[in-house]
View 1 (cartoon, rainbow, N blue to C red):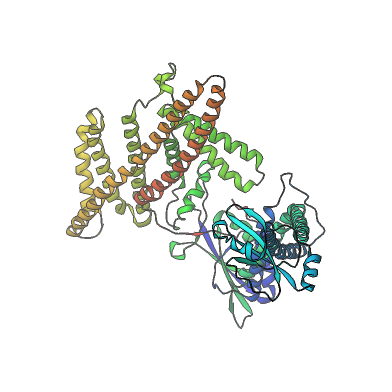
View 2: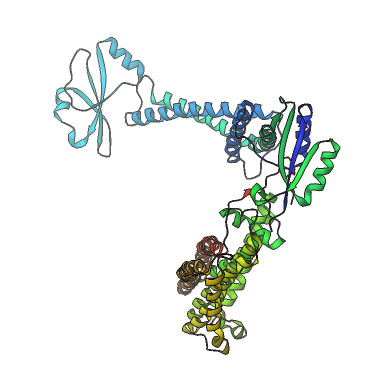
Length: 599
């Protein structure tokens, strides 16, 4: 249900403005209407701080140890952030040094250690050592005959050698040269170890301070968010009378206005109010029962409705639950999903995530029910169980196919009924009759076509043609009340063309329910068959059977759940919303203030 909204206009004196804004923020109920998108220097500064702390928070969350770590610190948030930034810069510098050293060590390892004292003595006597490397097939044995050449090492297809020669003696050796290193391999490794210890110390600093940093950064981000919200809200007022008077406009659900009025009276604030209309484009606040509220995030993934629309959440909720269960198609999988949601709710302390986990549990219940209807429990056929066989309504794949189409037809008709009711609410009773005519036509055509899908002819089919005639009459004569009959007939032809072409396309879209449900069942059956074959292996067969069943069905649950979430969402947003005449997007109700618990 879309809550009724009321628009308040507050007349504030400039001297009371900040005090009143602080009070409104503490109240946390008024959705302030934006009058400008400009940002002050302070707002930009706070935004930059929020970004910096957000990045620091995400970084430190990765370093929290499994035991949670210590959450106490004497540092202020800015001090902790500065230490982390300095540590990050130092780590980058050390990592660059470490990479350079690693390359130098890798280059020197084939040569081993050098006696720098001996090399210096040779240089004093006019001699020097040159280092060369080349591939084995490129090495020329004549070099060893012509020069004082010593092979140092041979690794894979490479050969490493040194040549002792006079300083002024030219060398004619076609090989890659290596500059004589200023430090020995031992010195390089010692420095590498020292840098590695410094890097390790920085990582230990991150781990030791991660929990405390995350806590104080989260608190600081909350305060900064309040500051940002407050500064942005103060910019939305409209100055009048040489900036002596400021006008602020905002929205609040009618059920909450009593508290706002008490606040305004407390501060003696002059104000005006009026009921919201669709022309004002009020923000949208949804208020549903406990079951439908679980599915609100799904509807919001698409968009919020306009103010004069119907909230489709209560209508999509049962269908989405059934469709998800249909696509998963297995009672055992539903039990697993329910237990996963239950266990995560026990483990995760963040209450903001619990509604999504409750959704997982509800979808698991839907999967249990639909899996039983389809007769599957971890891909084992429940019809093979004697006392359950009479309770399974779906007997074969043809019935599954027809069941998918039937659910699609029901959802489309529900969407059409919602569309008719909406048009009557918005434009008057007569404007919804053409849509009701379409409903009669669709139901009658479906009844006549049901015999093609195996339905037995009955007395009700004798009345189906009358439903078609009545529906066509309503569509052709009542689609545009107040206009002449020729316009209505012409417009009716266009409406019926769109109805017929879109109806069959919409119905066929629901075949995906059948396809996903059957494919999940077939994959589960293959897993069971292969596991049974592994189970026949002597001694270790039962262990392999259990592991294969756990891994195979675990993977199948993940795959089927993904498809079972995406495809019903597509059916909801395209087929159902389109037939229900849904239009949006609406603006989300976002109350200004620290207290957001207005539900």
